[in-house]
Image (cartoon, rainbow, N blue to C red; front, side):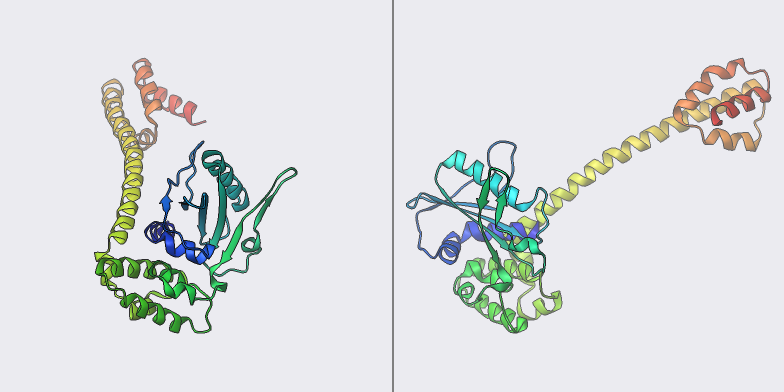
Amino acid sequence: MTYDNTLKYLVEQYPEDFIRYLLASEATDIQILKTELNQEPIRADSVTFLQTANQILHLEFQTLPASTPPLPLRMLDYWVRLYRQYNCDIEQIVIFLKPTTSEAVFVDQFIARNTTHRYSVIRIWEQDPEPLLLSPGLLPLATLARTDSPQSLLQQVAVQVSMIEEEATKQSISVCTQLLAGLVFEPELIRQFLRREDMRESSIYQEILQEGLQEGRQRGIEQGIEQGIEQGIEQGRQSELRLVMRLLTRRLGSINSQLQSRLQELSLTQLENLGEVLLDFASEADLINWLNTIES
């Protein structure tokens, strides 16, 4: 989720950089479209409309090739929804981020009996880093590009980040670079070249952090509700147990410790049933027979 948010941020803030790199064209009349498509909502990673060309650039970023549903089917689904809604040319590109030997990263089409759908695939670790080093919005991706010296490439990216003049932009790009570099570099090495302080100061990091906190709160609420229900049931059971013990004591006299232990194991429903029948007990033997019946 962190990498998706980082890359969505980069595309939305620097769409010209991605269009120049991926489509080899210049475009200034672009519009960032909603990424939640029609029908049962599915959310694309990035959808950009090039108004003059009447073309949509749809990007999907994949850390791992595994996907549910499978990525080729997802790409067809995205294309159909986009084409239905905008009725224009759609360029789809899947960018795989993390090196892998999986054959899935070489698949660039969906094939069914009556349908074939093609899209482009970029394995970022095979790409020349030089074009990525030329634009601020692409610098974070450069850390994942092809190199014989990963540490030197990371240092080169860090130098380019440090040369960004506008401080807020520098902080945001620094954070995105650190987050994406974490896919292939150890944290200690990243900290050697990039300021960790940018993390705390950057708006994109705070946004990602808040989203994570919100998800955590929601899970906590759900767990709290479940725990509250369980605690409520247990409290009700304990109250019913105390009532049953008092009634049994008045009916039969002192209850020995072995029977008390057996009573402690009864569920709330069993205790409620016992409360209804215990007035018919004449001796401790009746209680024992009843317990044997429900335990058998």
